[in-house]
Length: 209
Image (cartoon, rainbow, N blue to C red; front, top):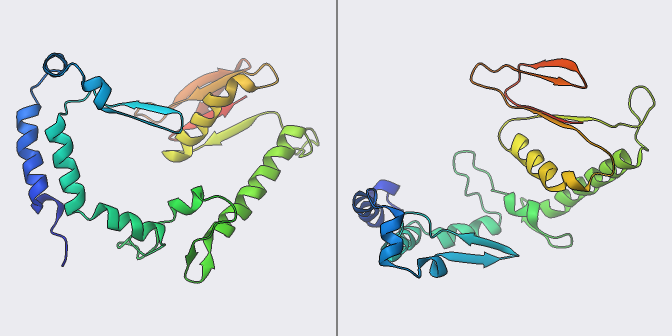
């Protein structure tokens, strides 16, 4: 039996009606009515604490969301993803984000190929390259060790390196300056690095110096 389009599922229609009741509510009211919501609307895992109590939600909201997940066959789709089935129907491809996070030694066979082994082969090459950069073994065009890295990217290609850099910046073993250029709508940002002007016309330019 095929799944109806999202907006035609009963839980979605119920959520729309629920939203119309909740959109005008203030968090002060919700906390006044339910002083323990901060203890219930939270989750802990892998050393991370998530507090989602400061959203316009109630127990009814969660119940409706879970109903929508069931009507959308969320769990079944998750099982299909972990099995490597082709759930990306627009491209007729497997969704292999899970393979990127699977430990070495595990396997996920897609079209007769162990994609986890392929992932870790690339990760090992990346680790070897990074080690050579940090140790100075990898030389630049001048024959000197590489000291400065420029990352140009948009979306995840921007946010991923930014997150890693911000998390590790205090572990640097040298005095480091960081200059970050984030464009405005016109797509041009100017800054000075080591007293030299720099202009960028890329959507996002990150400099880790």
